[in-house]
Image (cartoon, rainbow, N blue to C red; front, side, top):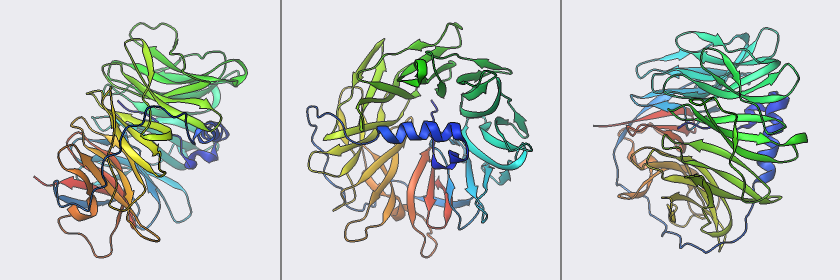
Length: 402
């Protein structure tokens, strides 16, 4: 299951900026539900495996690896911003790094990779526009549905890609690419494909007439039927991920500035609650149906959480910290994200969490850490336990030691 999150890097596109504004406008608090007790804060731990560090991308520059851009075997795709601020996509194939290049323009950016190492994202063309691409050893322009721009957001194990494209009529529609680009339609306005599972089921965000509201949708490529509105619990909602069992997670807007997470299965959508505060978001779901995300607490602060389909539990935080976040989870239940060290001017540190080891500061688990290196945030985790991170020196892969 791979999904999408729009980032500030896409502000170069008016379409992406539009979607980003919608997402950011929704973030805030949420209606209070039955509180769930937060787990105790964890000290810096010596539990868990050791890792070897492999630098990725352009050193000493900003970079990003989305949570669906890592695969087993130490395969990672990401984006570095060069000294001039230009995005440059790369692929680390487990042995060496390859620059993906562009579609004739000046930039490229990665959004997802599948288990075979095929990559999708968007890249600049010579005419200054950006199109979705597939990289399988060479860059392939996926085109559009008659409009100016497109972007590949997610790719399944068979190489099917979903994302968004501008149509000949100037609308933005979700698409499915399987050798050719297929328009998935909408609910009367714009639509965006954000995730796809191995069965070719697509979920995302579809707007109503005039883009006045948006709902999560499901499109099943096996039937070819029109997209299905999954409904909402409040004003508007969108789906961020789907696993191979067809379980869908996302968030719904209670009111302006107030969002909560939802879990959809067997034709029903339910609110997952919070950790006692007003706000909760879901960021990922694994094949076992365990979701992760972040919630505010009744006493203030934020904690990452795991949700097993019935109950939400906090992953805790570094001792004395008021903040942690859960970004991604793998098939074995390994959660990654970040927390903040205690005290004035606390530093952000990459963390992992399992039910066995609790919360672990990944800075303590490097087999031979370079001097002055800080693992700032864990960005993605593969099912084999390898982790992609952002450091104070750029991007890196943590390869789990045997």
